[in-house]
Image (cartoon, rainbow, N blue to C red; front, side, top):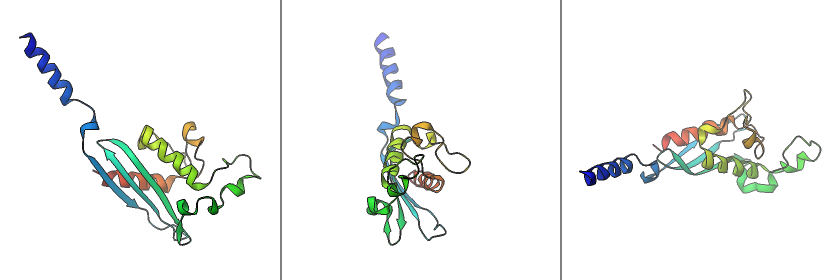
Length: 144
């Protein structure tokens, strides 16, 4: 009887295990064009409810902001404004991607204007991310 009880408990624990046993699913989403014709594209890989990877990019003048990197010029405009982070768009997005993988999509909070509300997000990403997060959520939904 004791062996049967131990076996039953082991079976229940295995059945209630984490979503890490789930197969990986991939999803993509592209935002509508903004007033300049740019779109945001997100590719996401999930395992169960866990985000394993996320890639965010935005078109810009025939290229993408990640491809442009330092040439996008966001960092250059921060020297006169100490309230700015002093990182390029791709660096800020990398910080956001890492945060999403570590903490999950739902942990990213936005203020009423679409900027990161969480202090731990704002330390690495100070740009408006409303459209970005809407596209991340759409990609996540498509991965189901």
